[in-house]
Amino acid sequence: QVQLVESGGGLVQPGGSLRLSCAASGSIFSINAMGWYRQAPGKERELVAATTSGGITNYGDSVKGRFTISRDNAKNTVYLQMNSPKPEDTAVYYCYTVYTDYDGYEYNYWGQGTQVTVSS
Image 1: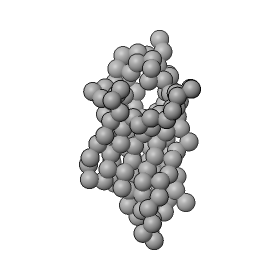
Image 2: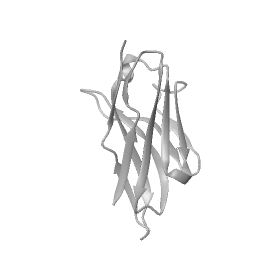
Image 3: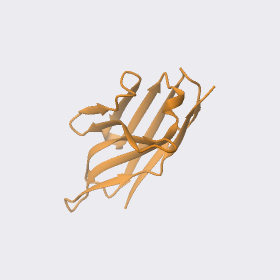
């Protein structure tokens, strides 16, 4: 069993800041990647940011220069620092992980999602 516990979502004003956290726990031998996707009403789910165990990061074009992903390997936790958010960043943000279990199998797992609303 694996759990992803997301926190930090809520209402933020345009130009403000918000930090999301996602902690992974359970039958995880190693985490290969963690990151965030988002989905706004009527739109497809899109990549926000991701980071691999090797430290490679990847960002969606719309958030480059404003959002920063970081990771605490000891805590199996990933963070998304959202600076200067815009109303178009309003969406449900989903944490995901690619992990290897103790039997050596690799899986993808998604969190339940946390709502982020950018509005004045």
